[in-house]
Amino acid sequence: MDPVLGIRLCWALAERHAMTVWMMGSDSDDVTVDAMASYGYRVTEHAWLRVGYRYMTLRQVGRRFDVDIAVSGPGIGLEARF
Image (tube, rainbow, N blue to C red; front, top):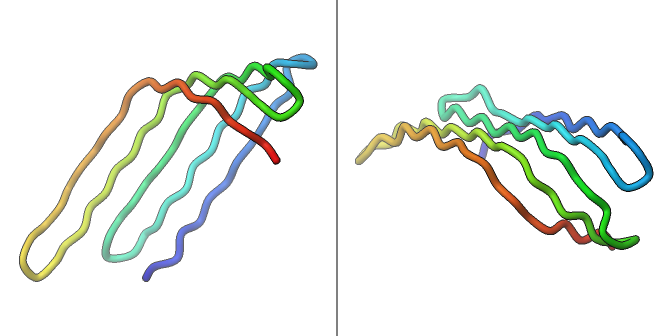
C-alpha cells in the first residue's frame, strides 16, 4: 500500500456554474497519476451535472507481469451531494 497525494481546486463562476480541477498521484515503485478538469452546472441543491476531461496513468511492476497504461478522454456525470 502506497501513499497518494492530491489537490482539488474549485471556482464558482456564477450561482449555478463552477469549474473544478483535481490531480492526485503516487511516486513510489508503482507510479499512478489521475487528473481531471470539469465544468459543473447545479441542477438542484444537491445535484450537479458535470462534463470534463480525465487523464489517468498506471505503471505497476510485478513478479509475474508488468502493467503500463495511459487512459484519457471526455466524460459526463451526475454528482450527488449529501
